[in-house]
Image 1 (spheres, helix red, strand yellow):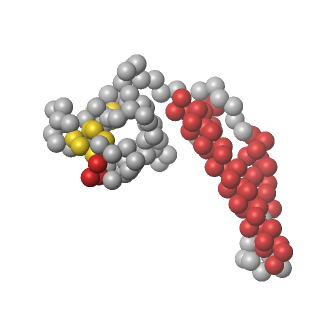
Image 2: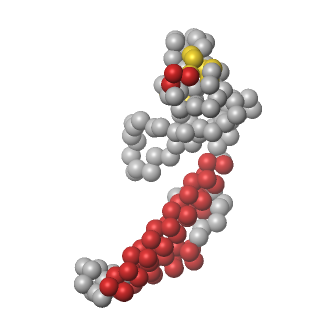
Image 3: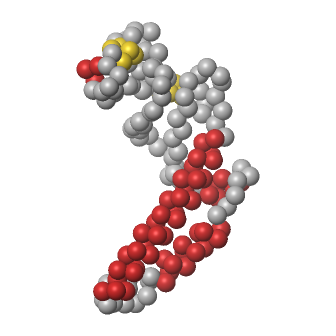
Length: 150
């Protein structure tokens, strides 16, 4: 993701990733890898792996956020939610997203603000989609994809 972000003019976290990579490789030592080192070495290796994972997640999340910032929608179209397919091939999958907003969807009334996750408090408004509270989801080509508020 950082490489893709770099192609769009973003910064590549080379030093951070190099430091994480070196730490990961150091912990491939012959006693650490199978866990046969002394306890202190094993505890340090576990801490190092957690640090490496946090650096990798930070780099990924930063790149994803910057890539998502490049998505433009027309004014008044709502709140964008960007889904990335990190696989090298096209795929179809169910996506679930928690959306935090102060605006209710156009096709649902939330009758009880204190418990928005309880489906008993979501009242559908039929705007041509049937009696199910929905949101509009479009792919990059503009094709509408089935979606539902739960």
